[in-house]
Image 1 (spheres, rainbow, N blue to C red):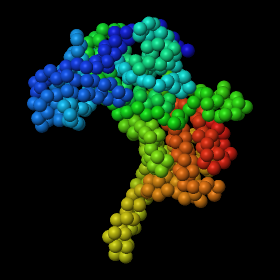
Image 2 (tube, rainbow, N blue to C red; image 1 turned 90 degrees about the horizontal axis):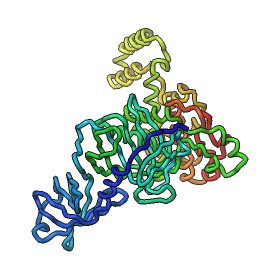
Image 3 (cartoon, one colour; image 1 turned 90 degrees about the vertical axis):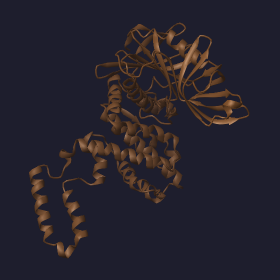
Image 4 (cartoon, rainbow, N blue to C red; image 1 turned 60 degrees about the horizontal axis):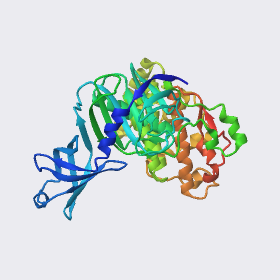
Length: 471
């Protein structure tokens, strides 16, 4: 395992964040209203406040205020926007979506670090290749819960920073940092892509509260500015595409033993490739978000969401290889054929009519395109991913879900007893198939978890397949 030798000093950075998070009661002021008492409560997502006001404040018609300052003792933070959603009984309540401290500058190129509070154990070990790093919080701690990411000529590190290595704390953080200067917006975009990629692979999409820290020097010790931003929300995923500990899924030691030394984690290079794709390609970003957010949906809507993801990834890969997949390889021959067919069609204009001509012309112009079914299957052919007849059956059901219909039990397997089992089975099948495409696309050629096989007793579909699929 690679060992990063220099010590990452987080002590001053996290002390500032901790002081902001424990403000409790302070004074808030702006040009609109001076020195009101405010109670701050940092919950798992967002900063809530209770503002004690007097009669003049209660008469304010505004429910949104800008450019405020909160002070407590020596600490002073700026609040760009404050939103009130309740005024009752002498108090106002609401949320603060952003806070700034020091000389935070969105446009200046600086060294950056992102700290996200976490309260759960993160899956670093069984999904992505780890590195060893030493960091200083209250003391110096070595951890293997760390990943190195290379995006172009920039190097990022993603790691878990704990206040106490043996105990859980509400002051533990997930950290992302970069050793190259960036603007805040560029750094935030890179961070979002890393968090999405890590969330998809590990099952831990951490995205509640983000504390962005800025530094002048690349040792990132002395903070010059900080920005708190409320983010889109953390999601814990029920399934991950690959997992190097088969004993967690297969509760049969003899069977698990067969896979223990075969399955591996995603390498640093493969993870970097996924992060870069997510950063550069909005379609990949959308697909990964769908694969994460589908875990928050009902079993009725899950297969439909995954069907959209399958369509999107298939279209992306098909368009990259469109010329090699075309039935007529020679473009000149294809153009001649279309021209000849359109000329022949024109002779039948009176018999066919304008509407018929329009529809047939469109089909002739698409004569050198493969069918939609073939497009959906093309990623497996292009990437050389083995698929079974059961896989093809599941893929062919996506039309029903895309048009708002739930396939009946008889369409899948006569042994199933209800539509919920059908939905669960298709959900698992589509998730594994889409994940196989994504992982093979980034160069991973090992084993993925085959959830339809693992949960065959629950779905009622007994499969003659492996518990882990080779891609």
